[in-house]
Length: 172
Image 1 (tube, helix red, strand yellow):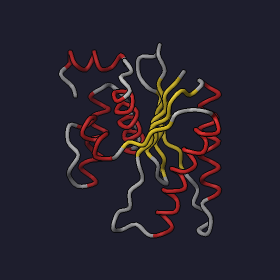
Image 2 (tube, helix red, strand yellow):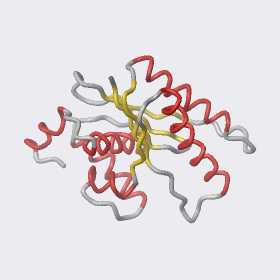
Image 3 (cartoon, one colour):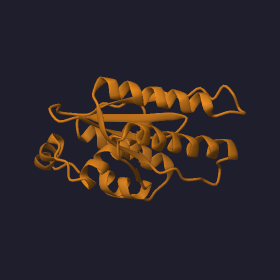
Image 4 (cartoon, one colour):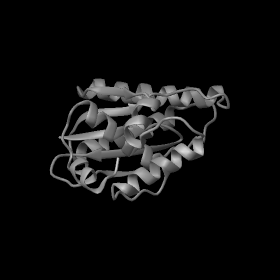
């Protein structure tokens, strides 16, 4: 059984881990946004990706960053973010898999050690936190999905191999 963490956005970061592997697998799912009048193609792409992860290693639990609206966001972005969150909830319901939201400030406090600062500072800190754990990332979305996953696993008291290693290295 595997666990999944998601950072929902136009570039959705994803991370998955299951007992028996040393570090999570992760990546970024680029959503198209070709049709400004419909979020349906992006929701379908996310659904298909979750189904693919489930085929590779059956998913037991999903964590995702709770959507928030920033001052600079417009209604189309809000529709997408809420739609993605609803798609995750629907897919999990359909599959009989528990699903939990992670508030941005909570997973950042856990994973980074702090949760306040400018957007660029916080995203760079997520990439650094991953590097400190020996996890390669290509995007900050991928790094943030890893943070959401790590936070969710800690909340559920699921033992993971990297916490012991990082305790000895002095990493967060």
